[in-house]
Length: 554
Image (cartoon, rainbow, N blue to C red):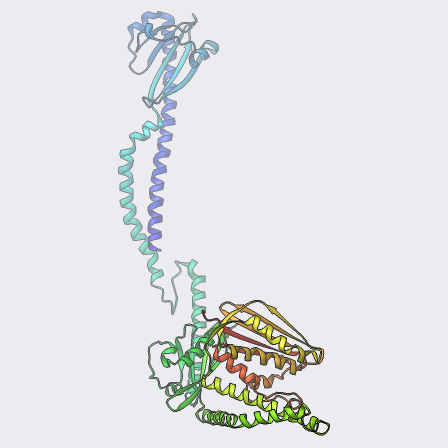
């Protein structure tokens, strides 16, 4: 502000001086031009009267120091000139002032010489014998006068700059000083600056508002601290750049991290892949959870995105001690794995014998129906065992195959073909849309994801309904969507449908063939490929599952 005031004063001063000099020069030029005109008229009148009386003798005997006198006859021939030889001068019949004098008695004109940068004024007067007396005087043009003023002009401007600089510096500091001395916490200023009163009132209002907000914020932080510090669960709040904004002591204790006053990334609290995966999904705006093992302890990490309107503002991470629950789950998985292996061989034999009975090898009139029932039940048990084994392998990351390149669209088409007969029995229409999506992963697991979603969409659909499968991409993610027009899932059950053996309606589920493990297999298969699955459903309107998995470079 000081510099602007300083520059403004300097600019105004120099500009004012410049235009003053130019205007004065123009005025003086106009004034002197008028004076020359008057002098020429007076001289022309006196000389013409003297020539009328004494003739050429007067011209030759007089000296004309101030003006140039030329005597011209009626044909334009120069009879006398005070500064040049008459014989060497050209005919003046085409001169403007001469022609005007012959016509009206007097005439005047002016001509500018670029070579001499001079302007010459001519005044002519007609004598009684038809000849013309012309008087002229040369003087510097306005541009020549301005050129001669350059040195004085530079001196004047320099003096003005020095004076204006000193004056402007003092004035700028004097003007700005009261503004610089304003206390923004208690803004006030004397009456010499009424223009600032509105601004100061707004600053006071903003200060009061900020003070109230800071008090509310302080109170909220205190309440938040009191609540979270008494929690056994850990809680961490981080911004979108993963910088930790707040945490409680339980979070540090559970993660085994040291509290610090410095700003740090949430990744610094635990560097495991599971924890990083969870946080990365939350930063992308998705709910994520994982089991984190530290020593003999198991913790469930739940990471949720936090939004301000539609804008992601940060993440909230909860850490729960689920060691006991995890131990029970491990025991159950181990039991399921052992039982499955023990039962698979005898059940396979039962299936073979029942198949022979079903084909009528032994007394078909009596045992065929029973053999068929045995075969069906044995088949269901084998499917159950296979599902349990699949889950066990997914839990242990022990799928006995390598990643391969597959086309998810072609795979979905093949699975729909296999299920079309089953869907046709209930007049359910199956369709697929989208396009080719190359994906690198475990083919068996990917097939299980699509198969179980489509199989459930048929099982829990209504007769005459439809199943829509969409395969596509969203950025660098493969997206699989399976939507049906079936019975739907109540909202309170959606969070539990991926649990093993969980049935929403047990009485209804008994009528539907299945192991109760399909969605659990889907969830584990999606997680195996670092993806996420979402469910949207309304009772009586259908269900939509959306699987999103990052595409890995082949």
